[in-house]
Length: 190
Image (tube, rainbow, N blue to C red; front, side):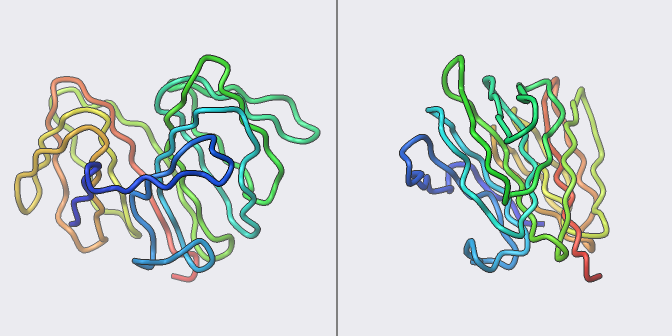
């Protein structure tokens, strides 16, 4: 089990100046944009602008706060908020993002097509919730303070994450009322 603290994430400004990204985790460790199998990051979108193109990559975008409107060529606009289901789309499609009500915070999961896949699930923790390891990597991102008990007890602050390997012990989450995002990452070659 690997604890990934929000306070340790460096902000990377976007080339267009419209926001910043903080990498939560990537596989293999240290991989860049050209050689990751999967990558999980959080972004703060401050201005309207085009999404970066990632040929051969599939994306899942989950809005954590604010409202984001995605405009795809030839399709109706898709408006996303914290209560919306995660939006899946190919990274090589031109998309324009708009922030009609101000800055947006989002969770962005990218997988190399035909190499890895992912699923994102929002989970509400009221008192206690058990999260078992999965067949691939499982990343648990907390939006509120949570006590996590596994092989050790861990106090998790907002936006901290835990990365579970298939061989790790189950993680029990304790909170009065917390929102957690579970990202399952599967190696397609397994």
